[in-house]
View 1 (cartoon, helix red, strand yellow):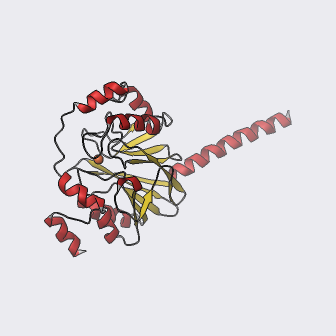
View 2 (cartoon, rainbow, N blue to C red):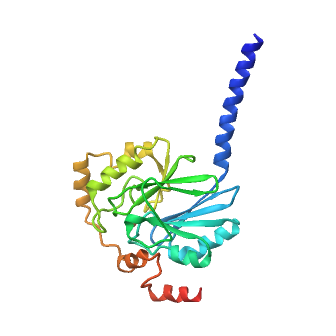
View 3 (tube, helix red, strand yellow):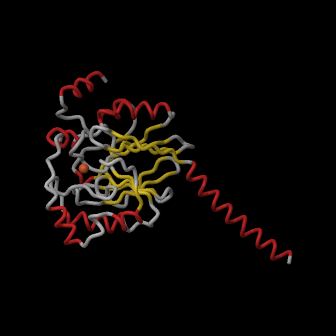
Amino acid sequence: MYRQLLAATRLVNSTVARMSTQACRDNNMIFRQLFDRDTCTYTYLLADARTKEAVLIDPVIELAERDAKLVQELDLNLKYVMNTHVHADHITGTGLLKKLIPGCKSVIAKVSGGSADIHVNHGDKVTFGDHLLEVRSTPGHTNGCVIYVSHGQKMAFTGDALLVRGCGRTDFQEGSPDTLYESVHSQILSLPHDFILYPAHDYKGQTATTVEEELKYNPRLTKSKEEFINIMNSLGLDFPKKIDISLPANKVCGLHNLPEHLAAKFNEK
Ligand code: FE2
């Protein structure tokens, strides 16, 4: 009887230990979702609460000072400024953040053709404190698109590959609906159903979704590949208004051919 009781106690204790380890990991992540009203872009700040090491994903140049201020206020050590791809609709804040917070390094996929301190490839790991982001290649919106997956926190930052109930467009910048369909299904919707997905944009006020929701309700990606290709090829969207300045600037971390008001800002730094 005593032995049975002891075994039962051990089982309970080990379950509690597992649960509290998980709770510790969750509490150990500082997470902020930041928004740019002009281009409906989300920027994400992630940090290890213990070591204070932090990363920023997809910052916007006009809001780089906001981001740098938050990093300073939270007493964080910004290690990496990362982009999911070379953006066409806004200029990345990467270059300006490197000036505002000396020592942080820029990160982008090698395939993107963008310059950066660190080029990542499919399968690479980006670490900050006790946390780790897996790089997954998801071409289709652009060739160089990647997503960053935190298996520990059950979350993924999907860039423009997958949006809430939508996906990135495929009609410019090496876009391919065929490739995007394969990427989203093999690299994102194959994650466990309860993973939370954070997009690079949302135009309707949504902030996040899950794998399960998108498998059920995504109006494009629940279709067959042939239907998806037809949908994407008949969207008839306007060309992004900032593409002519954004693409060349983003190829060099936002520090090239800037519009006058932003160039003046850079010179002040
Ligand atoms: Fe994009």
